[in-house]
Image 1 (cartoon, rainbow, N blue to C red):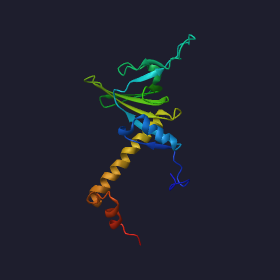
Image 2: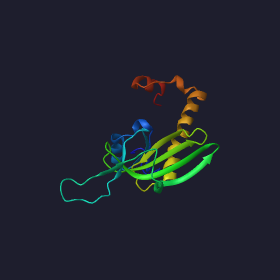
Image 3: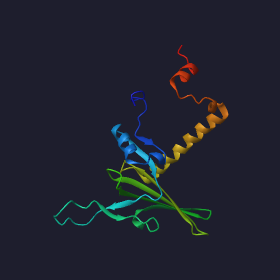
Image 4: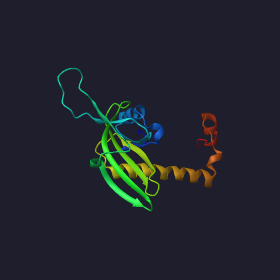
Length: 176
């Protein structure tokens, strides 16, 4: 961030599913940025509790756990059909017991209309105001960058330079 400065304004860090956890979120938030990443398909997400407080004990934080096979239709943002696959996109603010704060969650459900097989992907962001379409687009861009790296390795022979220790790296790129 010090190197980039204000040259390129950065708001989001997009990370793959290996970084879809609270530690990565906290690290990114300490840099005053927002994270966009993916959660495991079986993540235990909860709706915020909306009941009344009865005056004793701690206030309830967690409401009902989400059922990925029966997501309430009020959270449905978009439905499309491509060939024989129906794609439904849901967005909601959810809680996860391993995260400190609410998450902006986008669930993409794909249903094969012939076999009725269902799959889903769970994307999330720390920015609760980020629209679902932007969140999905930003996560898709991550793959374009990965493809560019793959192509660079394959076509420019960069796979041969796997130096990770200081001495080989400095010998490969001497100071002039």
